[in-house]
Image (cartoon, rainbow, N blue to C red; front, side):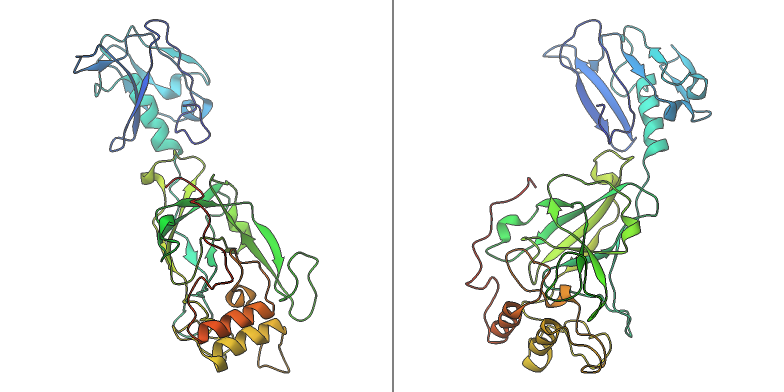
Length: 352
């Protein structure tokens, strides 16, 4: 129970009947319960041992939170010294659902410590209609609440064959890195011109990475499992919360553009979002302009963002070279995803 994401940081000791203890969660009430079966045929469960509960300063500082165990004990968490051991009786009356002091403590911890995160926002283009800056191989989000230590989870919702075995996988944003906007350069120091600029990127991993993401601005997420024409949901959880579905933020649903679809056109500045069609004067030309790092005076503004023109390889490589242009041309010719040059998908990286 003494995990980084527990509601209550506590320790539990049992003096009698040191059989296995069972943890149960009443999600509706927001409480933890620890019980031990009376016997194989027992319909009731009770803790028949002395329980020592260490309540941290975080809980002790919550004023006016009362607890009671069927009249056996009463008081206030505010009156308990920080880190004090609170002893319950032998547990004869601590039945499932009886409102024990243990549940009062855990319930108070749940209410006092879990910061409910807000849903993330997708990156948008400064164009009429505020369109989402959609990409083939990246999910781009504005991340998390200011000053909070949080983790960001991506769920693979709807991936087409041969990636469909990955549907349902949940992965987490890993430690972010800085990469250059210039087409042929990945790691800083980045060329000052053309174009100026750095980006923040993150891949995906199986374990949560908690940090204050809000300091980064837009984070561009890439992974082998982020592919064209697929749907994902992105959610946030705060470090103060237990890993329960009810503690995650609302879902941000994101869909990647079709293979080869980079822009609508580049008449506007910046280039318009993907439009579901792959064309030579629009998409292939946009990828080629990015490969050349073109900008004024050759173009009205700088070429499309790297994360929109990056097609290859199995995991997007934060680079735009002639192979990206070639893949875009192949998509125009009707070649689907993944192209023959790609290897078969890896095994499922994480448990659902």
